[in-house]
Image (tube, one colour):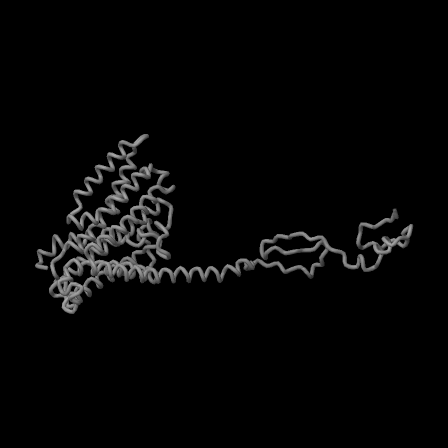
Length: 385
């Protein structure tokens, strides 16, 4: 075997003689063999620009200039279009599904009867399931014990049956008291140690998800007196019920729902444009400026629609209906925000793309139906309306 000696330094000259001579030594000592030695590569991390590949012994002028200005990584440059596309897709879904929900709700309200009651029952069942999932979330369970799953499911079914029971019997008081007794009995007889937090969350679920939405059935289907002064009733097709289809309940439901939509819309736009003062810590995005603008928009909508439908006749009654619609909208929204804040979630669910869950869409309507029905049933008859 041929023996030869190589120097470790690339800068030192090659030896003049290598003994003995061989083809291997000839190849090793050829001038092009060591003409461009492969440098050692290391990673140099800097605070300013991204990772820079620097070769050992590289000349100083060839180094990238150091700068403190933030630079966008290639990965971030690729993510920028995707983020904008994602936001555009979310906005598109929100608009499309919002229009679809609005058209569907309008058709259900006009249909009335068992169609309306069944739609309310389906929404109540889904909202009750979302509510009890929020109660079982980690953020809430750190401070209290949630009810067992079988109790939550039974309670969701009972809530869904309440609007149907109202449609059949005309009232819901007996069903609520009976359901509360059944739930209390089930919780007291469960294995382990019953907790008051379990009973309170379950009973509030009955009230919040079942009892309050049932007033919409009483409002739409219970107030069957015809709204004789409504001009739309005179041109309504006979096959769809004719003028008798336009009842006080239908007109009141349309005005109340439209007032809530106006309150939410004007509050959102006003808060975006003029919002400076936070309304409450429960929902930091809500401002006093937006709330005031939403209140004015709700009142104006109620008064204008009362002139369109010629009901209610008195201006004070229309304003009172608008005020109660606004109060129910705000307190319903804040109540759900409080539950979600304690649960540590942003949305109650993901059923509706771009809108969250069912509770996120109907929270402003939960208290409103009860307030509007009691106003019309208790006070408006005193004014001859």
